[in-house]
Length: 365
Image 1 (cartoon, rainbow, N blue to C red):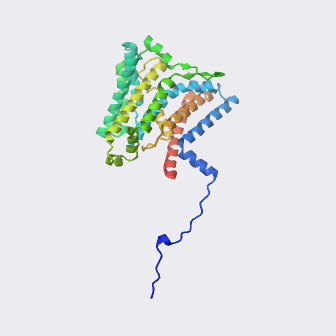
Image 2: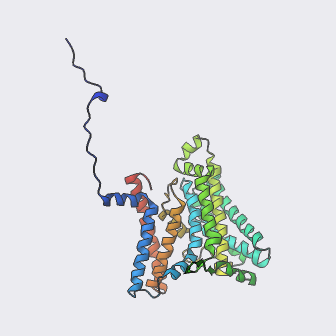
């Protein structure tokens, strides 16, 4: 008597469900959400087109043309650089963030102002002073976070107050605006780039002397070095990276030092832009830390760490700067400045929602 045997699963015929055809709109939405650079590029085009339409309709107090857009990029230099500093810190994971970058800019700017404007050490030596002071401030943050184990939010909030106070004490609450410092304003001027058959709009010199070199160096660090791969590793899974032999403490310490160094370079930029070393340069108004964090998050940097690209941060900085520039033309005076705060908050909420939606629906940014 034979017993009927059930064929093994591998031998069973499986009915393949027909592939679900997705509409072009669905695929476009997925591309926009999963490719943050694509989304930012589209938003840039939309913003420029919208402002141009308002300009043509007479709805702006001035011309939103190529010259105005290029001139507004002077504000993109420090913000994009600090956005890259936040990129490095946030990538390292464990709640990485640096709220002290504005205070580091203030303190380092005073140190640069003293060295260059008062002691007359020369530009190169004064630049080294700015880099060393900024790196030292970053090292304090890194030691608190990586070695002592302070939460980054608490550690950098504490140093935000400490460095801000030091800047005021060292400067005696007075700006340094010696003739040498005032002449340094030439480093922030706009230059004309020759073009066959015409010329391009004037471009801020700081883009070539500070921003582009910083972009290139940070990109090389993250994409072409083992250190960059370790940063992504500890940000993605700190425990797994540690078991793989990665020294998580040393690498996390290093990103805060790099953040401080970039902040030191931003201090030199702000001294040139203000023609003065001001003790409140990084903290006046809205400060520099929160806009830099907004730019990083909008650029696709996951606040949980391990995800983020240089190109996204740069495009996000352009978007923020040109939105603010358009708001000032649409709403002149103090009203426009106040509405910029609303726009910054709205953009941060939108970026956070997009990051969360993308992670839940598609598994990444």
